[in-house]
Image 1 (cartoon, rainbow, N blue to C red):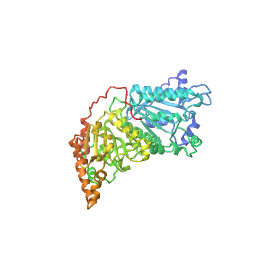
Image 2: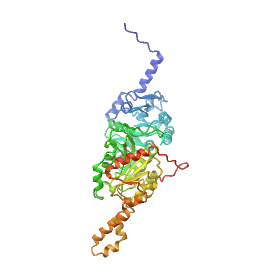
Image 3: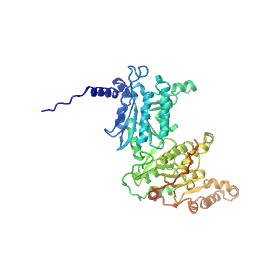
Image 4: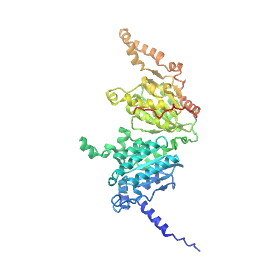
Length: 521
């Protein structure tokens, strides 16, 4: 005999109806329009991002407003933002997703309070925050309340900075003051064709400056990943974007007090590399892609690059060494000869500070001819902006391993985690050159007259260059002074770096007592 189903009380029925209304968002017509734009709904996005059945929603029933402040019928389901907590790869995370089907995802006071509450809970629980942004901006009807709501979120972004990782995923429009919350977070993801970020839209730009542009040119994913540097990761689709977010979270800790996740080592820590030996033996003027070196050093040859399309003369990202997460910063000789410029300094400086804030060791691979010259760089503030990378390295107290591959010239040698700004273990390949400037340029300055008066100027020049390298630029000169801890065989770089990181695992380097420093912003 079938057991009769228990009756549902009227109060429970009322609760279920309220839930269903809130979960329906803007209704089927607006949901259809969202899909026609090639965009997923807020709850669909959360389901794709989080582990299956792990999401627990909070403040679902917030959203009943006065008719003049809400949508057409006075209702604003969930006030246009879905918020809660769940898991990604088994680890706790807080997440909010703006719902474009409800008043265009616009932000009002209740909407902001939901996000603020979530940020507060994330800090208290010590878990990362992922924000899925898809909003038309401030809710105009709410006036200063909407503006105040944004400021409350900004304040919490700042308080949470360096405490828990903050990730912004822009999946639609993000305009005006709304852009500053993603800008304050650690990493920004965008999707090609559907993500747009800008302070003022194309119409305002045209009226103010006469410049003609569309949404994609002004603030699309390509623009912000290649030109402005606002976007750290660019994806071809929302599904690809969520995969990238999950991969990034695998490399970083839940909060500043915990270590990053480690994995079982399946790669020989002492694995040699003939490719690195070949690069070391090649002509020092011949360019190569530094990612090849990083891949040879990394566990499983895997490298998660950050800011891949921006400031390509320097490369930054995450690898594992001996199963542990490590941040890598490396000059890339394939672009601008690996020289430092404004964008490279800011890109790498920001990455170094993130790794230091969350206890992730740093590996620096140096092949740098100096700073990129020119009026644009000088007038653009390379002195001030270039100092950001120097400040970041000097301030960092995490384990710092440095390998000088082929050259380290001038002030750029100092900046790239040299022994003088407290690199912990500094290696050099046998053919590395460490000097104030390249041997050819130095000889032209020091021995100009001697070369000019020689019977065979070219032969004399080669002789003097060789002498300069041996006397001043050889890594053995730096090693004699303790500025390089060991000169290593290129093919054994992985083995050496893994060993050094294991040695430094419990490094403690207390900072001097002060409120905070004054980085050259």
